[in-house]
Length: 114
Length: 112
Image (cartoon, rainbow over all chains, first blue to last red; front, side):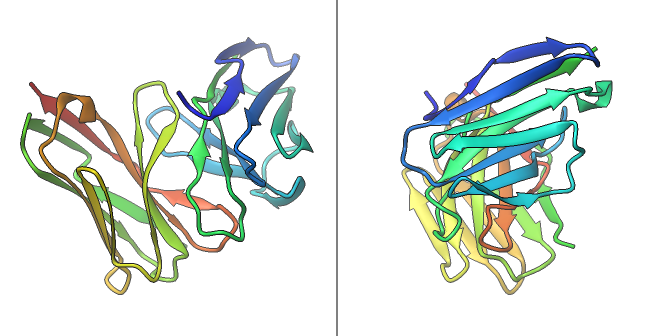
């Protein structure tokens, strides 16, 4: 079992819907990440939060809005998505960006935009 | 721009065989290199992290090496088992911000 929990596991949404992806970790990690993985492609970084502050936004469209309410939780709010946004969204955490430590990934949310 | 390449793209071996997966990267200015496995439809499981100052790391039947100057890493799996079947991803971190650049992976199948 992964120590990073993502909900929901699957999500189908229309282009006019608003939905949120949630991620939780209780390892005391202070860095959290959103990655996007398209089918048969490697993961690509979207956002990095360090000590609950957004430190990296990889030029992600504004229809994706991240939020880090506290050090254990990370949300990704979705609005007016396009079918090409369908992908596996992976959350990860690490001890902190100042430490040379591995990333721990959740099992992802598989998003389908219709 | 950092590019990560993994060879081969797919590999099928009989159970018990030792095998090597290869990873190369174009920019040697890396912070660390990480190896992950991904099972179908699942997230990534961290296997090994090699810091830029290190040459290798070992965990059980796995051994990863790093030659930063030549831009290469290898993942050695000893005595392979059917449970090792998965896609193995190599990723390099350039700065210390958790921005991993992944290769496309090697899909490993270990036949009983």
